[in-house]
Length: 226
Length: 408
Ligand SMILES: Nc1ncnc2c1ncn2[C@@H]1O[C@H](COP(=O)(O)OP(=O)(O)OP(=O)(O)O)[C@@H](O)[C@H]1O
Ligand SMILES: [Mg+2]
Image 1 (cartoon, each protein chain N blue to C red):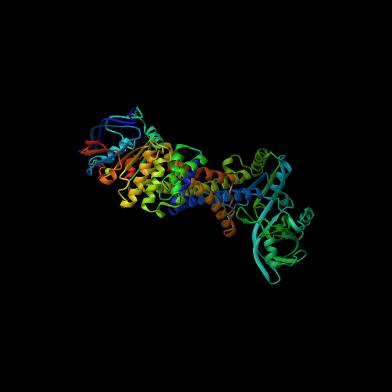
Image 2 (image 1 turned 135 degrees about the vertical axis):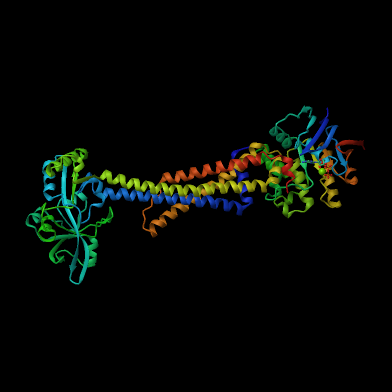
């Protein structure tokens, strides 16, 4: 069974008289445990695709099956639960809450999940340990380097033990050495059985993946198994 | 997700921008404090008015010469001297619902003791005055029926007069001159304060009969005229007393139609109602002022919450991206608004209590902070938080996560 199955997905933005087809009749299957890199020119629809897969955005047309379930018609709250439990998201700009410490940021998905306090703390600490940041967990994001902030973001994304980790240009704001460290974490997570999908412009980064999907104008141009 | 959790998230939200939250709270503090203070002043004025009316005595009827429609302005020299001491005696004798009667004639005179002199009200009245007015001497005695019969030249002075003429000396047994007539002081009245705009302590009391013989004289038409008659009714018989007095006076004055009444009865109830309607309007005005300042405070909360939602769009997007539901975002912002308005409410209540105590201390006004006004203020601040917090919170909760995330 496919973990993710997109059938003829359209994402159409209407801006006044203008319409932009960010995704056009895109179909795609991803299995449990795959390591996928999505590439393509700027504006080709990579982020749009990630957002649809990550249930942050809804397709304009087409069908999305997640874990075999059709989720095209789910309510906003049901999608919120999926984002909380099944999917972890890592962004180029880290997107940490500035007023909270690293630990508090990592705890937040568990708070929304309604996990009890002690279990929450254990899970958050082990997630921070997994990204190698347990000594700096009482620091605010502004007191951390970019690489460290991205590690906090990864810890936050994996703290709820999701099946899927989505990363939209996770190394885009980092220098190449730091990027390598981050990719190392992703590689480990794949080894642990998490399905990782990442967007990148960088061939070196993409080379870590086992499958590369290339997009052009909202359509699949290429689907390469390495 | 538990309520405590929601509160803790909201609390973190408040703390994340202390200055903004502080200013919002300040708006509510000022609003609630002014409600408490102004209600306190209004309540105080009402209580003071009631106290003054009570101080007039219980079950009291006040009879004055002149028709009802001119009663309030007919106290001056032009008053027809239609009410007499004999009327007072007749009421005492013939009206069974009447407990006690005191006729009185008050007039201002110059009073001297040695070098000291002062102008004060001299009230010529009967010994029953003390019981009716519930106003007694602290030292010495009031004059009695014997003094009345003999027309003794004795007087009882109010504590303001005692202070003006004698300072800390004991005035009893001393002689004073009232418009040149010699009187011996036999008592000093207790302190009573101001009732019905008359300073009760700036008075000298003399027997009514002595008054006619020395200071007042007789009226050519009516003889022993009086300025007013105080009547104390028997308990729960004030309606009967009014009826009996009115009939008796009409009979004695040969009045056939109520339109020609040459006297006016005022009960304590009338006076109380007048006082209450005045203080009622006063309280209403104060309440409206306070209400407006609260409304402004509430709009302040909404304004700041809206700014806060816009400013924190990115935060909301992040929270939604990691799985916050509509209700969780909604309650975070509603609770933030409610916590701020309640904090402002509690601080405002304390400040208001402080404000009204200071006012009563410095301006010497009576102010009363009632438990009702505290509870009311608390509930109002809660309601303000809810009412003005819900709109911005809904706006936050409805944000599209993608749009929110792209906000910088
Ligand atoms: N909210 C939006 N409203 C209108 N058009 C949009 C919106 N978001 C994206 N688009 C358009 O959809 C197309 C795909 O955008 P998308 O962000 O997916 O590109 P991308 O491949 O991620 O590009 P980049 O590499 O620059 O991040 C673009 O033409 C973009 O202008
Ligand atoms: Mg993009």
